[in-house]
Amino acid sequence: IHRPWVGDQATAQQMLANNESDIGGGNNPSTNDALMAQNANLVPYTDQPPLGWIDPCPRMLTINSTVAPWDNKEMRWALSYAINRQQIVDVVNEGAGATSDFIFPDYQAMKPFQDAIADIIAPIGEFNQDKSRELIEKNGYTLDSGSGKYVDASGNTLTLDIVLPPFMEPWARMVVQQLNDVGIDAVLRILEWGVFRDQTGRGQFTAATDWDGCGSVIEPWFGMQRYHKKWSNPIGTPGTEYVDNTNNAGRWVNDEYSALIDEMGALPLGDPQVVDLMKQAVTIWADELPDIPLVQTPVFILFNTTYWTNWPTKENNYIQPPSHWEHFLRQLVELKPAQ
Image 1 (spheres, rainbow, N blue to C red):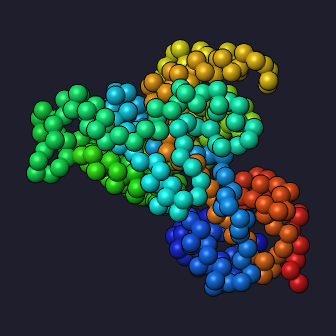
Image 2: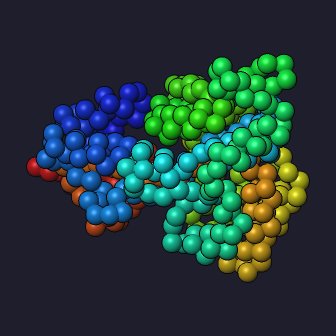
Image 3: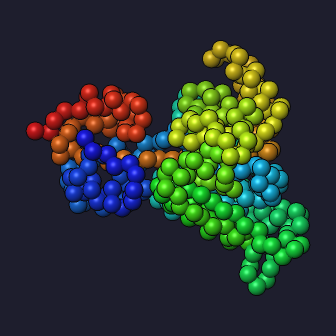
C-alpha cells in the first residue's frame, strides 16, 4: 500500500491517477473530479454535500508572540480584521467547509461548547479592512503612498514573514494576498517539512500557517491547554510536539489563562464547572488573540480501488479516513484485495 507523504502535491496526485499510489486527493473538489476523470477506480470519501471529511484541525495563522510588533495584541487584531475567511473557503475549498473563529472543529460533540462561547468569539470572524488599518495607524505606522505599504517612524516597512509546509500553500497565498491588500508587506516562505517543524518548534519564526490549536474533539480542555504557559520554551529550544506541530509554538504567556486551564484539567469529563471555566479562558484568549483562526478543514480524500477495496468512506464509516495517523492500522486490517 503506497501513500506518498512528502514532496510535490501535483506529483503525488498524478501518481494516484496512474495507479502508482493508493490514497491521496486534492485541496478542492474540482481537483478530485479531474483525478477521477483520469481514473475510474478512484472513489471519494463522499460525493454528497457537505463534501470532504472534516479534519479535527482548523487552519490558523500562528503568531510568534515574542516578535515585535506582533507581541502587541492590537497588531494581532489588525491581522485578523484584514483576513476575509469566507473568501478563503470560497477560493481554496470551492465553497466547501466553513470559516473558523476559534480552535475547535465543527464536530457534533463540540457543538455545546461552541454554542457556549459563540458570542465571545464572534468578533474574531469579522473582516474589516478599515479597522485593520486603524489599529496599524494607532500603533505608529503610516501608509507610504509609493509602495502602498505601512512604514514606521524610521521608514521601515511593516512586514510579516509567514512560513509553511508545502501542503499549506493554498491557504497561505490567500492570507498573504489579503494582508498585502491592507498595506502589510506579507511574504510566504515554503519550507521542507522537517525544516518547518524544526523552526516552528524552536520558536524561530514570525508567523506560520498551520493548525496550532488542534486537539479538542469531544471536550474543550485538550486543545485549549496547548496555549498553557508551561509549553512556552525559550526561543531556540525545541517545544513539546503534538499533532505534527508544537504546543504553544508562538510562546504566548498568560498567567490567568493558564490558571483557568489548570482548574479545567482537574475536573472530570462532563463536570458542569468546565463550561464556565472554559468561557472565562476563551474570553482571555479572544481578547489577546495569540493565534488567528482561519477556516475549518474539509479534506478531500480519494481512495484507489484498483488493488484494494473496503476503504473507510462516509457510507462505510468504520474508522476515520486519514492515512497518516496511528489508526491507519485499522484500515490495513480491514482492506480487501480487489482481485
